[in-house]
Image (tube, rainbow, N blue to C red; front, side, top):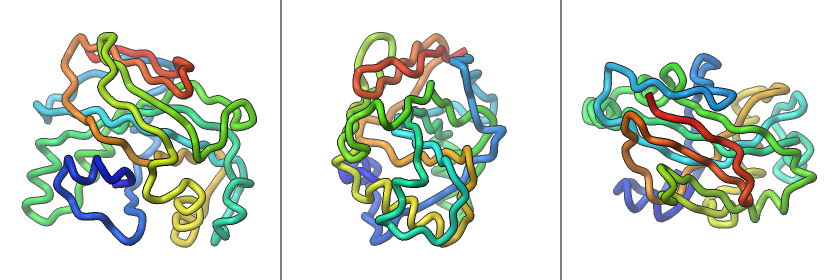
Length: 196
């Protein structure tokens, strides 16, 4: 919930603070391997996000020092089992099972931040079958990546290699078997895989 128009499309309320959830390492889908549609859902949605990689150990990091803890960026897909999520929300239950299942975090090739524009001005998009379905810019985030790093580090020690997904813009929707997903950061194709 880090882009206002996505909050609106999901009919949620804006939060005064960033909202976090975690994915285990088993959620990672790397090297453009295919995403296999799981048997526990019939409504898997894509959510493209800018992903930053942590480069040093840190805890209780002041916002002004956050850039020192980030080295690279890419695009990633936060897959969500939307039908499972709605069932969990209705019952007031935690919803890790709809967000953190195996291979639910597709991650593209990382690029050094030194080779990109400002982390606050990164353009990104997701194409499915050659059609752009989502696009955004980090300037439109409600909470900057620096704020996210600072807030996260109040609760969790950040470790080298940790990945921070920063939220999705409007335009989320379902994927189908056979779909071809391509994620771009500043027009660099960094993520390119199929739904199987």
